[in-house]
Image (cartoon, rainbow, N blue to C red; front, side, top):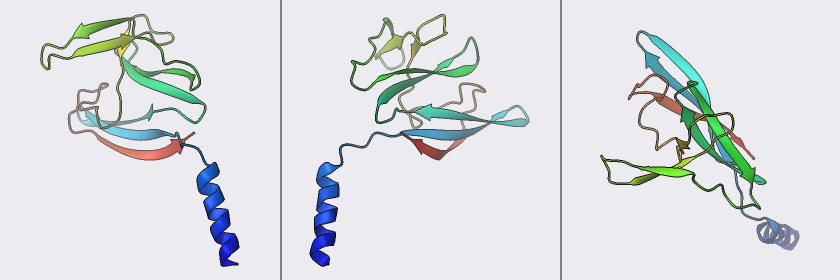
Length: 129
């Protein structure tokens, strides 16, 4: 019995490939005296990868997805950040007029782009694949 369970667990470890999962977060921020709540996704799944950006023209988060087996999209231009000295790559996102920088993760977002709130809160509400 023990041998069968051990063999089964070993088989699962060797047959399982890397796990790719994206995360959805619920963000709550202040806009004046009101609170707003919205959802944002970061990362892709087993079959696809995804970039996240915020489009200030529409006030919406936008996503650029591609199959994992294909090469990631190339940046179309870049800008120099005078505060950090870094070069920030810009990408074309679907249905967006101007190229945008990628927001790499929830942790990288220091201000709510919809409200400018520095003290926004976020919680992971779902993993997706």
